[in-house]
Image 1 (spheres, helix red, strand yellow):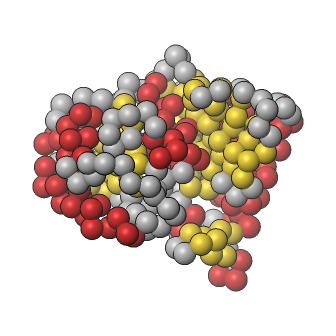
Image 2 (cartoon, one colour):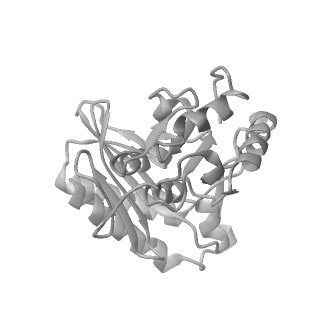
Amino acid sequence: MIETAKKAARAAGEILTEHYGEIPKEAIREKSKNDFLSFVDEASEKTIISIISEKFPDHSILAEESGQAGQDNPYRWIIDPLDGTKNYITGIPVFAVSIALQYKDELIAGVIYDPLRDELFWAEKGKGAFLNDQLIHVSAAQNLEQSFLATGFPFKTKNYLHDYLQVFESLFNKSIGIRRMGSAAIDLAYLATGRFDGFWEIGLKPWDIAAGAVIITEAGGSISDFWNKPYFLNNNYLIASNGKIHSELCRHIQNHFPFYKPVYS
């Protein structure tokens, strides 16, 4: 299964690389406010689904562009064919393919592929995490003062901007610094390999998170919702870290998000 995911991610990456920098404006559509789509997203997703379905025709699929297909099989593939679409269509070289596999309620495999750098981050449950063929591990930062963080702006949930900015100010003043890459998949992959120490975001979907969750966990990190509960895949509030700073990161965020509020995006 992991080899199928790698094959699909690389095939999709070839499509992204082929068309990078060459998409005309008239080929870009707005799915919803501030959320964009091009024929490349659709071609990438179609290729991924074709490769997976050829090998595992009975498996369920949840994909960003085409939605849910099949619900009876306990295996479900969770697919983002192009995470960082706005970066991609404007020529910013930060985007990725993200593919995860879930068995019943458990995430068991994940692949994130950055085709421009040929960096394939992957993991199977219980077998460690890898960047290409090298074993990876989260950072050793012990506290927020030693930590380099990443985040994503709540561009689809701007009603939470005030609370988000309060969190940002708190963590900015406490940490080494914060980056906003524009691709949650890249953020999570970088955290797994120690480039970042912590990450938080509001409004993410399962396809943004699932592969990164497996890779981070297998790299020795932690992932949860804002209240340190395991509901991050579906409740739209995500914290990920190297594990050592997780409780401290949660406390800072909970100061401004003490209770769960439904996210609509």
